Length: 88
Image (tube, helix red, strand yellow):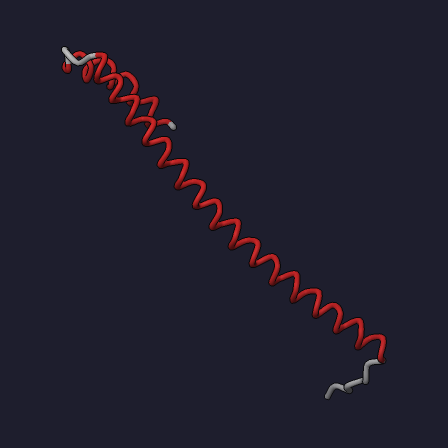
């Protein structure tokens, strides 16, 4: 069916170099992608933990400010800020 022509030494060398270059590029790209993904997930988890701790401290401080009147705190202050928290 098809005639198989023999490649010259230069063509074989070029083909092998392209194959090696392609394989190394794919391997390095895959490794960098997985490392970046893991680092991004860890950074996001740490940031979320810090922000929740900060919000917890802020709410505790607000609770100290309105220590004598819990109804006022929960009715007016907490509900007013709730839509802003949900947007972020």
